[in-house]
Length: 398
Image 1 (cartoon, rainbow, N blue to C red):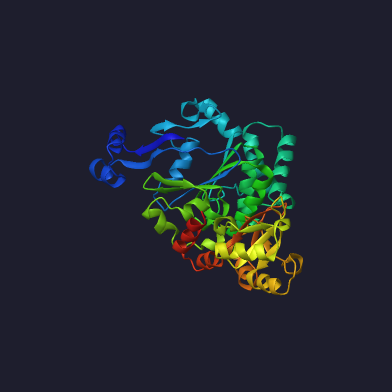
Image 2: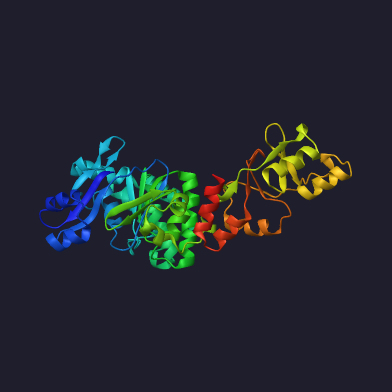
């Protein structure tokens, strides 16, 4: 999407000129009665990612997603998909493109009450005049993906809201689209069902690797499912980034206010608060070398690794000092039962482990290589919602 813009009203070129001069959406409407729906949006969606566009009501997010498949015609700008500009497509080419490359899932399900579940899923294929036998096979495959194969002969009013939305998703998937547009797809669902659908979408994405553009006004939903998030305000995109980037480095005061009530511990992972560990290679020193390293670095624990930096254990200052007095070797004092987590472990899942462990919690790779150590203060700060404390800890570690 390059400079993608939508102005509602007569003579929209007037507003384009005023936008270039730095006029706000509010001022343009007051002076010209023209409404800026989307203001020069520039972004690229990567193949296979869930790209979330979010914002409050009136921010322009639903207009933006409808510009992408031209349910709303752009005033200005381009939308390039695999080298082809969607804005320049003829009506015939656009219809073909919508049928084969891009599908949409709506908030209100939009199911036909007089059709069975399978017939609803087949509808897009039927429009394309796909033979009945192939339609039914594709419908069954799509229903199996969303766990509704046993309900194919039921009618929509026999299903729960969450099941109806699964039918809508299956209908979109039946066309095997490369891009899936989801406009507030889960917002009409009850909170518990909505959370289940979010988890199911992530699981489904692990299998299908579709390119998904997902619209929501719910920050927690965006953080839960998005690979990257674009935050909109008054028709403009104010920040694009991963959930972690937006939480740790908000672009401006508006974004800061938007995220201030979010529980960081359910967004940030061990990789964001771990610090570089002080280490000693196992066969390159004994207790005296270890204690000296601890004194030099002002630490009370020292990690012991092999030549490939795989974790062997940890030494405490108390045990090391006692070993020197009693002339003990490293093997007798290394704590080998070190709690370990991966880089992707959520802070919320670290709290109990950090609180009860006698030694620091280590962050390791799948091969056992030591990557970092967890700071208790950063974890506690995140659980308390203290973003400044977490950011300070991350900054100091960097």
